[in-house]
Image 1 (cartoon, rainbow, N blue to C red):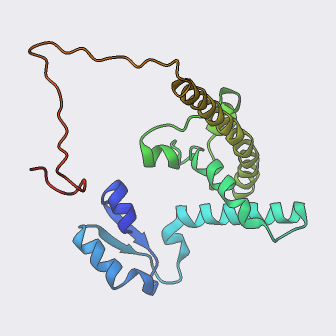
Image 2 (tube, helix red, strand yellow):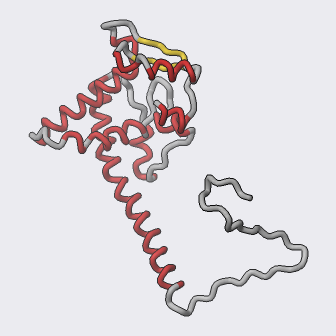
Image 3 (cartoon, helix red, strand yellow):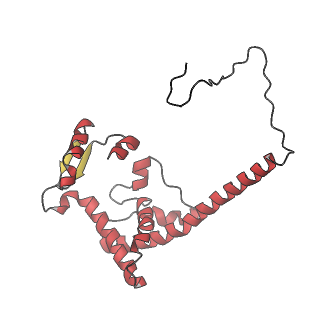
Length: 198
């Protein structure tokens, strides 16, 4: 919870079940951050309906994948792809994806896969949502290597630039100053970035 508050600030309320992990230090943290605590009713999962539906759909998709592969050992390796497909897909109830609600920015996907990823997931239809999520997993798994290839291109350009700088023929641009120019000066009497400058 400290990491959530540190990155994104305090939310209006925190909906959770009545487990003991939500008491004590966690409850005090919510009070300090002025976050309303909303425990769900005992033995009533529908009180946290949207979260329970999404968890059920992801579990169903994992079961179907294990059944297809006849292997239950590496199921955890598929969870990130399912989550990526889910988080980048808009929900029919809100019209927004979890990614967009969290970062206030639409996820960037290749144009060829935009139509698949922008089709809303309907949590009220578990069978359709599961099939759709499995398809989005395949798409997410395919477009990630494209992003990695783009990263490799950028790293290759950096390698060539570094080799050019170290070749002996590179001449850096010389800064020319004139009277009246403002410049930054560096203080050398500090030993740490946390130490105040003299």
